[in-house]
Length: 173
Length: 173
Image 1 (cartoon, each protein chain N blue to C red):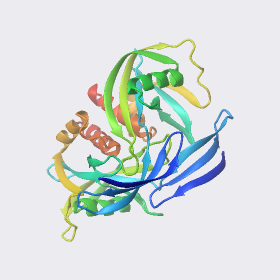
Image 2: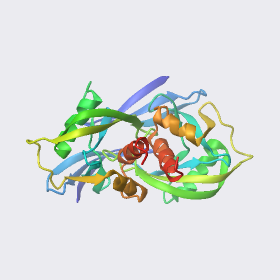
Image 3: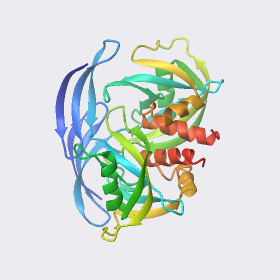
Image 4: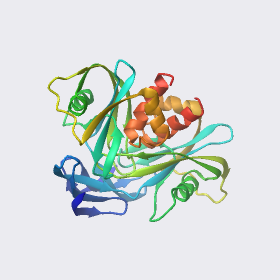
C-alpha cells in the first residue's frame, strides 16, 4: 500500500522519510516516519535477585536516566547477540543463560523501531571489560525496589519500565 | 551543556536535529535527535471491567495494531485535556473520572518524547462522535484478556503494554 517515499535524512542511527500511505478506508495521506533498525534490551539478574540497572547520560533528555542495557541491531544481527555485546560493554557482565521476555514497538505513531526484550541470568564479571565511567554507572537494585522505582516515577525509560513489570508479573511480584 | 544544534527537518509532528552534546566525562559528540512535543495516552475502563482498546492502521509498521487512545500535545496543552479529546475522537466515549497512571519516555536513545499515562472511568458514549471506521476499530476487552494479549505478544505497542501492566499491578491482577 506504500505509494511514495521521499528520504529527508539518512543518518548513522535513524533515517527520516516523508511517506505517502493509503489507509484501509482509501484515504491517502503523507506521514513523517523515522526508520530505525530495531534493537534489543536485557534485564540482567544477579544470583541474589538484584537487577543490574544502569544510569546513563542521554542527550535527548539532557540528563542521567535509569535504564537497562540495550543496543541497536547491526545489519542482519541476531537480537540476542546484539544485547549480549551491550550487556558486556555497558555493565562488565557476561550472561550464561538467556530467555526471551517479549517485544515492544517503542513509538508507533512516527517510528518503526521494535525492541526485543530479554532476561539474562548466571552473570559473570568480564575481566577485560571497560570500567564504568561517568557516562554509564552500573547500579544493582533488588527487583522489588526497582518495581517501586517504576511505581514512584523514578524509572521513566519505557523499555526498562516494561521489562521490569513483565518480569515482575511472571515472577508473581 | 548543549553546544550546537543543526536543524535537519521541521515537520508537523516531529523535528530532527543534529546536536553536539558534551557527556559528563568531557567527551563531545554529535547525536541524531528527534524532538517531539510529547503526548498522552489513556486506559479507558468500562463499568463492567472491560478496557476499551482500539485497533488502528499505522503506516510506520504497515498494519493494524492494538493500542489505547493517545494523542500528541498541542502547544501549552494540558495532557489530560489532550487525551480526553483523543478518547472522544477515537472511541466515541467521554470519561467523568480521570487518574494519573504514570509517565514514560518512549525512545530515549534518539527522541525526547514523554507520554503521560492516564486511567479513565465512568465512560459515557458521546452521541455526536464520529463512527469508528476501517482506520480505527473500537474493541472492549476484559482486563485479564488484555493482559494475556500482552503476555502472548499480540499487543506490541509499548504505551499499551505498559499501561495495562501498570494498572494490572495496581489492581492486583
